[in-house]
Image (cartoon, rainbow over all chains, first blue to last red; front, side, top):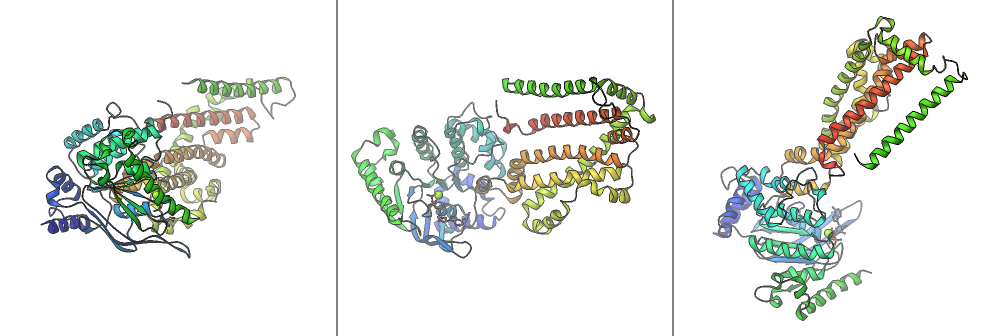
Length: 303
Length: 258
Ligand SMILES: Nc1ncnc2c1ncn2[C@@H]1O[C@H](COP(=O)(O)OP(=O)(O)OP(=O)(O)O)[C@@H](O)[C@H]1O
Ligand SMILES: [Mg+2]
């Protein structure tokens, strides 16, 4: 049953046949609002993924036989030295790039195109500066043909969820960095994506805002539970948020080690607790040190 | 209006006032002959002459002649230039075909087109509007082209991941993102149009500010020349100012203070 459903999802992404699976996005909404898990799985499969960039003369191999599996609704954090191919990995998962070899699959179907089922949040927010907060969140819904009444209701809900009521009609430049990133996150979540891809989303924020945003992300994510691939340079952030952490080796990137955080973080996971409490736990610090050691060894090997 | 803006207005008035004072001083002291630089009183007389129908042309004819020609050329330049600039920025094949042509045509200064324009379109509205068009279309194309080319990549990527089609990317991302730069192009084109029509009227015209300047020169009536120049300056300034007001309306997200 799962297989058939997955094929259907693939066809919708590939060809968008009218009627068949419904227009992709509308199907996405219906499915999401109904019982998504029956229709398709949202796991990610990386199978011998190789990514090379051909420049003038030299070819850069960014990723090399990368193998990994992310379960549905799992929160995976990716860490590794700069230039090891983390962003590349995310772009491939979003369908913005295609691997030189190997396969990247969502719910058993090869990812071919970008689309609203694969939301991406960048470090620099990437809001449309000419649109208000409201219209920014509305953009994806509107271009995918959702009726206005439904859209308005959803937008209201998400604006409240990110605590920006009263700022609906502000332009992005009138907001702080943290507020802008909240809007970007709402713009992604409102699409009910199957996977959420985040590339150092909080790197541009100060420490306080960063901590607030981490907790807020957990709150929003828990309500919807899309599969998450989250990139960060902050080992603390990784240990706090992740179900599992993938450490990638220096370029060409491969899986160096996978660490299971849930085994340590307890049944309800420590990300549900305040950050400042969690960070004081010895088991948290132990894990943090272990991961930092792994990343550091990769950075030092370089020089 | 903030304190800073008041200050700028003040200094602006001071510098213009200074020039006028120098003008009054130089002409009043008798050091320059009126033919080289007519005193303010003569210029006022010149203005009255023009108002009464200098060379039997009613005063409003100068406004009408210059403005009609300019606006015709300017708006045709927008209508043609902006779509071309946007199109070559968006469709690579078009860029490959058209940009060498533009690169070759661009260095020809607009006044150099005057003889051909007259041969092709005559000395009436069409001929002069064509010269304005040639001058104004360049900033329209160039700025629209750059505006679209410089659409931030991450905005296009974000829109694509939200499910935008190519059409949506162009009309709802690239165009609004480039609107401020396109507007700048239109404003530059406005100034260029105005300068060009005056230049064209120097060569061929029966009315207009270029006509006034040229005939004042031929008849050794420097005060008429001065009136023509001052009118050109004031009208040019007002047009630019009006454009800035419209621009602020159209691009509200650009405002710096709330
Ligand atoms: N479009 C591209 N063209 C050519 N080379 C690229 C391109 N994108 C990435 N690369 C190269 O691939 C390698 C991996 O880049 P990537 O951006 O994925 O690294 P990263 O792990 O995200 O680094 P950082 O932590 O600094 O963001 C780098 O060496 C980079 O120079
Ligand atoms: Mg990166």
